[in-house]
Image (cartoon, rainbow, N blue to C red; front, side, top):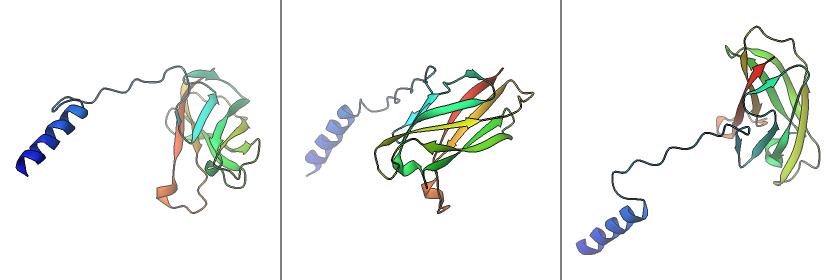
Length: 141
């Protein structure tokens, strides 16, 4: 029995890349906006120079929406909201498939050079386990 457990530990260590080796560092995505399996932002790109009106596009799983919308907020460098709005589904949203979305944010250019676009999963239950977001760093013109 002890020999079987020892063999299992050795096999698992080899399968996992060895004992004591650190996991490889994830490579930052500097070309496209961050995404996860539930949402992909096509515009703006990471560190894009943005101005008003800012058109935000992409696709998200239908489960990201509530009543065909989800919240979008543009923050300044200090994390203070500049403008908030809602992305609108551009197709049938009552699905688990990807659905195109779009919104346009009109805002006064802030004094800070950088900001963050935050796309939040609609969460009408307000339960923290249903919270999700994607943050896209942007620069202001």
